[in-house]
Image 1 (cartoon, helix red, strand yellow):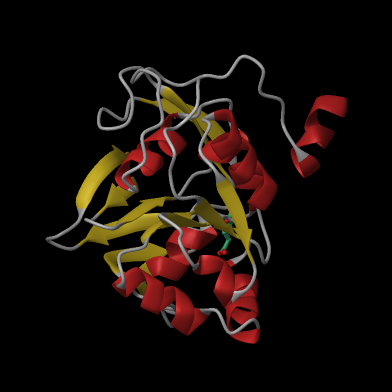
Image 2: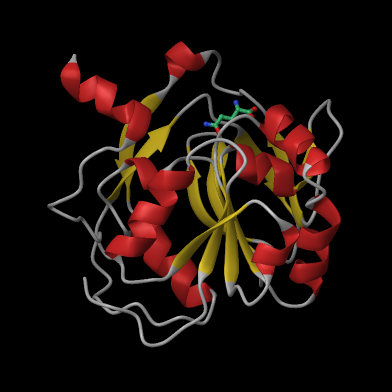
Length: 221
Ligand code: GLN
């Protein structure tokens, strides 16, 4: 994949979770990426990825780092958001049995709906809005999206749950594209942010991709 035309960066919230993996995928697409730990680092971003990790932990860190209000303000100013897994939980308007955090997209999520960490799994699916070919999907103690509101489009329905959805300004996925060789969701989000990553609408599989950080351990087993 080659470079994006001169463009604003996409930020990755850098408090906990899969930060480097998202930055690595953006880099592979030629999209400028920026870790975001401080409110000032939101300045000039086209979009912000709220990564997967642990939503309770992330919500506490967002509060400690005084990032909640600045992110809401940047969103009101046009910043696009993408929540992966825990990030999707934080963005959801309804979090079953718990207090929602940002509540910015009209979806209802159920945390840990597949069971424990041991029920994590990989699968592949066709997501027509995102790629012409099936893309690999990694679910790690994922939530299920159980309902979407009228302004929200379902991008992927699987079995009894919704796995990916979007409204005008927010994308949510309950799985982790950044932990697979596919760049398709990052390409899709970059376009949603008004950026112009080149490349076709295929599954975006990068043959040079290797897992980063903790995921390396699996290849050593
Ligand atoms: N189960 C986690 C939570 O509730 C999310 C897991 C993930 O982001 N992979 O926050």
